[in-house]
Length: 349
Image 1 (spheres, rainbow, N blue to C red):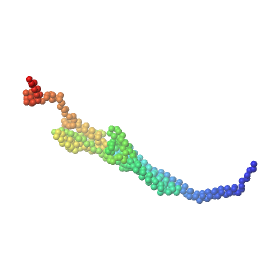
Image 2 (image 1 turned 90 degrees about the vertical axis):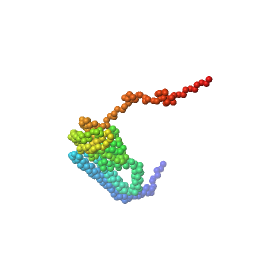
Image 3 (image 1 turned 45 degrees about the horizontal axis):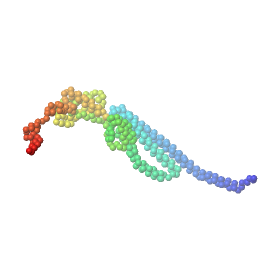
Image 4 (image 1 turned 180 degrees about the horizontal axis):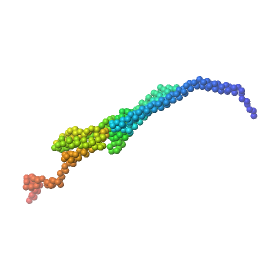
């Protein structure tokens, strides 16, 4: 068995081909390494600048939110500020504002950096932006309720329409605000139920805890009562209430007798009003009714609107069981004769 030696010509050709390939690869690397290096450095620079800018913007926003908190805390030293500023409300509001601003800043900065990186790779951005626009339109139509809830929540928080601890009337539900979110507001109703209200569904808001409230009490008196004396008694009750604790802090104005609200045949309605601290009108109304009732009873002035007079029944009226006289009871009367049955005819013989 003989071993065949390789042809020197074939070996030379293979070496030449490999040398040409290596030379081509080296030339390709030599021609493109500068652009690769430039693009790589550009991408790294874009990422570093985006990260640093995002960190700086978030830090500035955090300081801005902290300054808002310090400004609000400075109001706690004042009488009005201590009544109107709620720590939990302020904290949730500033956290929500800061979260929204930080999210928007991150989205804008990192999104711009991502587009610049794709451009550095030589990718055409026109089809990508067009596809993103179409996807945005589809998302807007498909999740328009979610977008509406989010935007409504942002504006509610920015405008400070209500906050934690406020008593509000949202139309679909009424209660105390427990939590304010960007999409849902949580209320606790008068019976203790928790209501979850989508911010986009709220068409109107009645805030009962901003500014001041009004306590209104209606007192129904007899028509013959002395109104001037009743007015003096009610004003005295209001003055005593304004001096008693804790009502002296909750009353922001004197108790006023506005006059007659209704004049009926047997009674008159006296309207009493007072300006109170926000959210405290209900308690003051109850206390006013209690004190006015006791004072008028002590003065001998009767308040109407109590139990009704007992109705007269058949047991109370002995004559109700006696039937009314009837002409048919006398068989000799014309009515009795007409109503009596006819006699049967006599048999024939």
